[in-house]
Length: 407
Image (cartoon, rainbow, N blue to C red; front, side, top):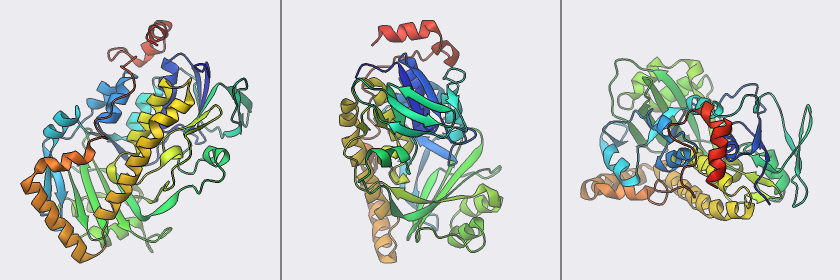
C-alpha cells in the first residue's frame, strides 16, 4: 500500500489524536471522527514516561510536555502506616532513561494535540462505523450519520470496547475483567506538603502525585467483584477503605467532593490479537492491546503506536511486526505487577513489603531495571517536526514541504 493521502481516525482520544497529527505532518489529509460531543478525555491524569516523550518529539511536542513536569526530588513506595518501603530518585531515573516522567491532566495533552491539527479536521458528535476495511486497489469505507467516507487508511482508536476490532476479528474473545476496580480524582490541595508516592496495602493501593498547575492527582485500586459500586457514594467508599492511611490520604479525601471521584472497573486484553491491522485498517491503543494501569503504560503505548503507524503507514504488516510483540510483552508484565501490588493475603503482603525494604537498601537501582525495555524505547525514525516550530507553522505549506523531504 502506498503512503496514504486520505486517513480517517475513529476516536479522538490520545492515541487517535497523536496518530492524526503524525499522519497530517506526513502529508495526509486527516479526518478525526469522535462520537462524543467534545474532546473530553476519560480519566483525570496521565503519566508520560521517556519512551512516550521521545515519540512526541517526532511531532514536535515532546519539549512542550516536558516543560509541564512537576516531579522533583524523591518519591517511592509506602505502607499504609506511612513507612517507606522503597525510595526512588527522579534524577537517577531521568538520567538512566533519557528524560523525566511527566504527570499532566489528560485534557492538557488532548488540547496540545488537537491544536496541531487543521481547522475542521476533528468532527465531534460523529459516530462512525467501519463498512469495508478495504484492500489493495480498494479504499476503506466508513459510515457516518452524514454519509460514507473513503480513505486509504483507517485508524481504529475507538477504545477497549472497539467496535472496529470486533468487526475485523469476530472470533477474538475481547477484553476480560482484571479483577480490580480503580478510583481517580484531581483536586486542589493547598497547604499540604508530601512526597510523590504509591502506597500498597493488602488488596489495595493508593497514589498521590503533584501536578505542575498546583493540583493533586490521586488514584486508588482495590480487588473487587466486577460491576460493584458503593452502597452510598464512592467518596464514602474511599473513606472506608483508605481513611486511616498515612498523610496526605485523609487530607485528599477531606478535600474531595462527591463529583470529583471517578470509578471504573479495569479490563484488559488477555489474548493478543493475531494482528494490529486488516486491509487498510490499523488498530492503536486500547483497541489493540488494552492493559492494566499498573505500569502506567496504557497511554504511553498508544502514543508509541501512533508514531510507529505514521512511519509504517504504507506497510501495515510492518506496523504489526513492530508493535504486537512489544505491547504483548508489556501487557503481560502489567498483569504480573497487578498480582504483586494487589496481593490480598496479609501474610503474603507482609513478606512482599519486607522484600521491598531489603531490596531497596541493598540495591536501589534494581527498581529502575523493571522499566528497562520500556522507558528506553526510541521511535523508528528521527524527529521530523522541528521542536521550535509552532503548531500553526507545522500545518503550513512550508512545514509540509520540509516533511516530504525527510521521508
